[in-house]
Length: 486
Image (cartoon, rainbow, N blue to C red):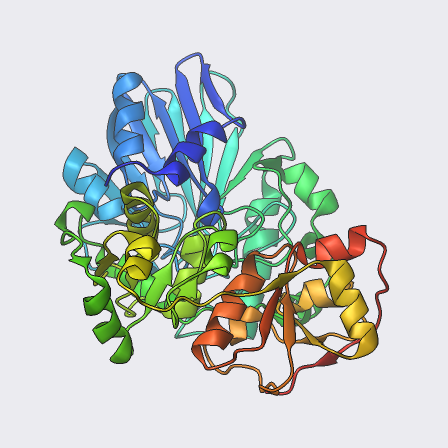
C-alpha cells in the first residue's frame, strides 16, 4: 500500500518491549492512530500473533528477522473498532486462528474454551474465557517454563485495560447490565486470581473508545491494576454494574459492522481496487449528487481553503476512528490530499476500520481545483484571547464539541456543549445568523465539526485555534455552561 507514517510510528513507539529472554521472543506493536496494541511472542522456531492489525506485513517481517514461523493467531474477541488481519495472516503463513467458541466465527478456526493450551518451545499459552466486554472475550496467560511455572504475562484484550475495563455495550445479544455482570465475574474469578507480578498487556491504550479512562502506559501488572484501577476497587457486583454502564461514550455506528466483518474475516488488502483520479469537473458532479468528499490535509491547510462541502479530517490525529464514526464504513468517500503519499496513507487507515470502497481522489488536489476556476471555502480561525473578548461583547457564541467527561472536568463559562460523536445523528440547532466559535481540546475535532456545519450550510463558523487547552493555559475564566439544543 505504499508509505504509511502510521505504520512507521508503530516501530518508533515500541519502547515497551522488544526483548529476547533466553528462548522467548516478545514484541509489542502499538498503532497510535487506533490506540491499538498487538503482539508477537515466540519460542523455538514458532511464533504467535495476538490481535493483529489489518495490514500484516510488519509481523511477517519481524518473524523472518527472528527466524520464526508464525503458526498461531490469537484473537481476544471480535474487535469492533478495527478490522483484524487474522484471515490474511493465516492465508499467508498457514497459521491456525484461535478465537472464543462463542464468537460464531465463519472462517476456519480453533474454538476456544477455558484452559485450552498451546505450546511453543518453552512457552505455554493458556486460554481463559472472560466474557463481559463481549460474550466471546478471551484472555491468554503466558507461562515461560525456562523462567518459572508461574504466569509471566496475560494478554487481556478489551477485558482489562491499564486503569480501566472494557465497555459492556457492544453486543447484539446481551444488554449492558448483563455484560457488565459477566465482566465483574471474569475479572474477579479469573484475572484477579493471577499472581500480582503477572504482566498485563491489553489490546488498547489511552484514546480508544473501547474504554473511558485508560492510562497512557502500555503495560502494567495484575498487582498494580488491583491497587489503582478504579473498576477493581468496586466492592459489589451491583455497584460495578451501575458504574461501568453509566455515562458510556457514544458508540460509533461502525463498531457493530466491524465486528461482523471480523466474524467472517476480511478480504486481503491486495484485493482492493486501485483508486481513480478525478478531475475538478468530475468531482463537482459527484458533489452535486451528494458524494462524501474527505479532505485529509492538516487543519491549517483546510482552514486556508478547501472544496466547499468537503469534510476535513486531518491525518495527524485519530483519523481512522473519526472517519469511521463520522462517515460510516459504507460512505464511499472521495479523497483530497496534497500528495500520493497522503492518499495511500489515508486509504490504508480507512481500510483498517472497514472503509474499503473509496471512489477516487481529486487529481492535483486543491491546487488543481483552484486552477480550474472552482471556488474554495475558507474557515476563519481565532485565538482564545480573541474568543474571550468576543464572548464578553456578545459578538459570537461558543460551542464545545469535546466528550462529556472532558466537559465536566472544565469548560468555557458561556459555551454550549454538543459532543462531536453525536453530529452524524443530528447537528446542533444553531442560529445561522450568529457567528459560532467551535472548540475542542486542541483544535483537531473542532475543525471536523466546523466542516460538518459548513457542509450543512452554516457560513458563520469559526474554529478556535488551540482549543480548551489554550484557554486553560491562558488562565481565562471557566465555569458553568449548558447543553446546546438538539
